[in-house]
Image (cartoon, rainbow, N blue to C red; front, side):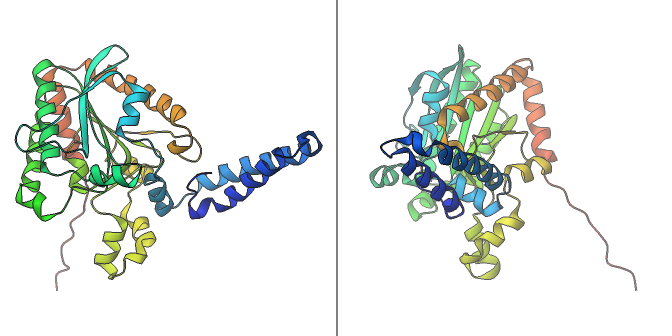
Length: 321
């Protein structure tokens, strides 16, 4: 198991033992032992991933072998043509977008792109866009609206880049402008949280008619480490913060923030990209077909109502004395 997480160590030990037995000169001599261990591994794997904590789900969402934007494009779409630049400042490699075909339908796809090795991580700025990245997304939103093409976005970012240069070039303004633009798009829009959905950096491409989450993805206004540092002055309390923040897909479905959960292979999408893509393809097909039946006014009104409904609170007055 590559890049096993802490809670996966018992699984790794069993997998290693099975591999050792399969490597002996005559595996038939230990066939019964291998079968026994494989059955034990299957039970342990099912039990482990059925009872994940919020922090463990966060670790899975950040797994370095998870599919990223360009991987999803290869798995799901045909004829992907990447478009570069915001026509104002430059090309931000943390946002990838362009034209593609999904089962014969022309669409526009946009998403965050992290890196695999150190060089690519730096080039992609660890998936944290600058303002020009969001303005590139804005340009693609407008292109989609001009030609009546649906938009599918893939969200996987720790958040918008908070550096001085990004702030000087209008990071908050770029995000706000995208939110205003997406609210009025007269086309179907589906947002998929595939890994981390971090704060406004995620929401800046996430105001869809449908918001989907992969089973082990997370979506929040701040990272568990950041929340713990603010509340308790100790980032080491991130596991406790993750529990109370309600950032997991089941929590957010129950709260009405997302519309559906896309199942992942046991162990996470990084264990089997093809199986994860088959599940996501089916949900995208269903949701795009449903949205295609709506006209522009219905799409905009539905999106407005969806985001107005998010959030619930109670007000209580102080007791009279």
